[in-house]
Image 1 (tube, one colour):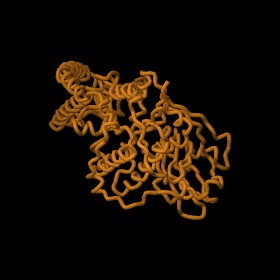
Image 2 (image 1 turned 90 degrees about the vertical axis):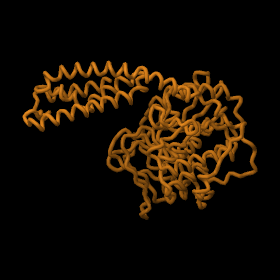
Image 3 (image 1 turned 180 degrees about the vertical axis):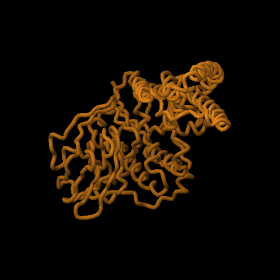
Image 4 (image 1 turned 30 degrees about the horizontal axis):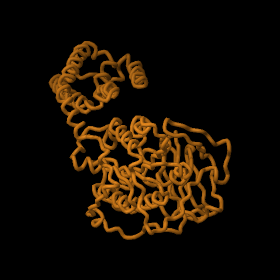
Length: 462
């Protein structure tokens, strides 16, 4: 049985996506991915799972989405540049088959220059280290598919990712090893520091946590933890937490200086983040602690001060303009499913079925409106059910139960929203002519509390 290790973000984290596709073909999958995390988390997992990686037949690495999102400005990009360079060099020196997956990225809310810089940097380093590549982002740009309705702006449908996983499994023997380069590993020395290696540990604070994707031993940070002297002088790059409380604050402080790191943390199951501050050096006076509620603490990524920190000046314009051509031997874009064809099928289906579905929906709305007109004057329940948020919520619940529902959801929600606006416009015109028709506040209805209770139960059940 072949072993495949996934290093990445949420694109690899869905149950029925790429991991399931690999498993369908008999692959043993070790998924070390976490959502909302950049290349620094890949590096952290690489260091704390070195034995697992030694037994890998293929390593699939993908981080480009949050290499932009977590450093989404030209001022922050040098940190992303630094980390991506570190990760690729560490991957190269594993002497394993490496497949780099470049995921489609949200085009609207990310800095456009950062989008291009990160995309080009990944491809440049993939070519430098002769890694294998599947460039789904390039495919979407080439085929003008960024308006294609996927799971959401940042993730493809499960069935597409699952098919990619199956095709990767069928081609493990065809992926190439990197070419031999006459280079040395000049990265800093990285250490994945587990909380158990710290000082002042209270055994009563350890808890075991698990999700469908991963499990961790966490430490409820109720006291200050200090560092063993063997780690003095190291830089703290990133922090791994598992937090199930809101209103928490993590602090790393040096008791003799003002050089500290603070981060507010809300409910985040297993999550890894960059400190962004490369000046946090561990000394005998450095401690890590939690303010307000105790943070669930897992570990840290450290780096020696010696090594290449990639502080060179970056020519942004030159990097953006680079045209990177991947050698045919390493280019596996032919494994990308015919998504353009899938889009055509889905669009045709929607053009036929949407009017039918919407007609049925309109009949339901008309029926409800007739019913509501008799009860609205004395029922909080009816008033709540006529609110836009309730209508949209119910439609989302119903349409999330199937892939076709996901496909048509934007149309249904848009239709409901437009109809609600029309109804509200008519209502406003009526009360303008006759103010006595204005409905009283919801709180004034006798069934107000019961209506709220029923509303909560509906969403909890669904």
